[in-house]
Length: 107
Image 1 (tube, rainbow, N blue to C red):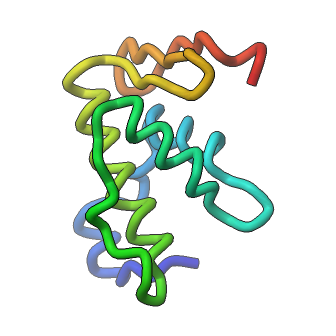
Image 2: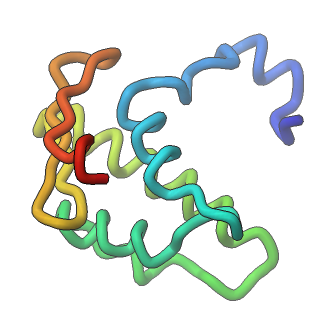
């Protein structure tokens, strides 16, 4: 189920969120409560992003924070080619669909 109107899905495509950085973040940040905010904060800090300015008090803030940070992190990956992860690990992106993970075995 999605909150995106069908007209927007048809215009922009349904799969524009399915790239390596987004899928990697989805795998790392999902937990039984939904979104692991502490890990998200840590990943953003490791990659030089301050996300403290985003409101965390109104209804639905988790989804907006997730979408906003995914966009910021995707831009960072396109610019640098890598994403620093907790534990001194990093993911290096060869292109938009393939990713070399230095953390996979220990994660």
